[in-house]
Image 1 (cartoon, protein in one colour):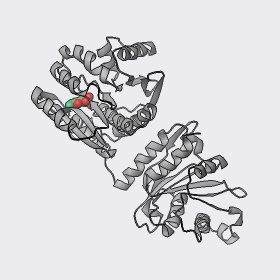
Image 2 (cartoon, rainbow, N blue to C red):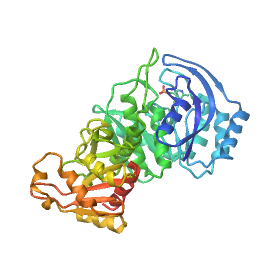
Image 3 (cartoon, protein in one colour):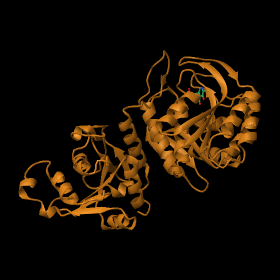
Image 4 (cartoon, rainbow, N blue to C red):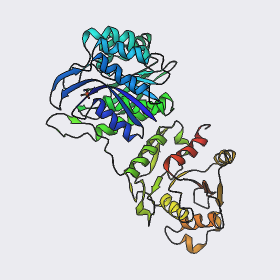
Length: 435
Ligand code: PLP
């Protein structure tokens, strides 16, 4: 999938186009860029701006639009009226999601949108927005409404919608030690909160809007995309590093590729509405194995599992090799027979869930835990191995699901298998679509 980011260069790599390419890369989409300007800035001060000429700007747009299929666009630093007019001319009528991130001033104080361009920004760019993502200051600046209360936020969001933005997310409002985003959709509104992190940083706004366009373009719902973007940004702020002499730069470090692929799938899973309904008493683990795992130490999982707190899911602990015992050993046993299977997740057993998998024609295996030999029961860690080998004994087709209906004091359980975490996720979505 190709996404286009239109904005300014930030040589510090913390914000702007450079930051967007990093986010796109991390979220497995190809990043295309159109530079509106080159800035000279670092973590302590904002220096000079050199705008792309009108010709250069339009030639960049034409060369990208004439070659690539683009699934979504993010617009950030535009700086002046002429840039806005060129963007409007080329982008109006494009039927892809567009996130407009109204960058007005950098955290280090640089002006990123000229005062005399605000009128055109409102008239031409805001109407292109599928979602506009101002922070509190930007919402105040664009609407002229000073935000001191929920009703001020409501009025500011409505004003931005009246200017033509389909959806509005006003980010980063501090409320009772939480950071709250106010979401105004076409016919709904709600808030999304996370723990407040004490951090002045460079890059979080860019991380948010880039993650948002990625998830929207992957055809997630607006709510899912917003939840993902918030979690992604929260994590990038948590990992922010003081690399230069001034403010910290947000990071979403590219760890081990396997861990990062699993992490992404887990973030997607916990942002699915209703996902909490499939979490068993013993909670859930989501695992991903190296190509030739020798033991569960070669299988990544969540050290404290994915846990349910009321209607929310939380990743407890870290995602690391050896992070799971039971689901990982189930995977290890199944992988021995069916080497292409590298990922698994356990779900709460419900007969309706099995029925939905059957309707979707998944290959389902079952074993009877009441038949487990005493000798297996008496030794810690052998049950899962016994269960899996019993289920796959003399089976030729690759299983999607293996389950058992429990035993005295043992919770029934479903395990979903797939080649990669996205495949497991796909199968879970078959159940959650109709929960
Ligand atoms: N510089 C450029 C080129 C940007 O696009 C942005 C934000 O989008 C910034 C600086 C500001 O980043 P921050 O407010 O995180 O410092």
